[in-house]
Length: 67
Image (tube, rainbow, N blue to C red; front, side, top):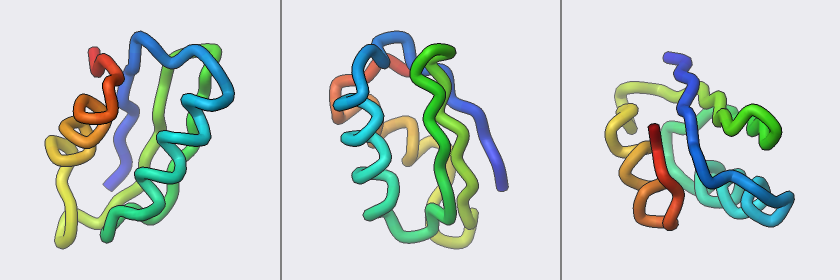
């Protein structure tokens, strides 16, 4: 499954690195591409292991605002 998640407070390259590291450590996340300028996180994941709600909750727990 592929999803595009809008994040409103994605500001620095450090934010990009933090999100990439956190998503890479989650079982079921196959790939992610973060577009800082657009405030978008493109994620490819396996729904057997993880769902979109859990990915959004992870971003929320990290302090990012999912739109």
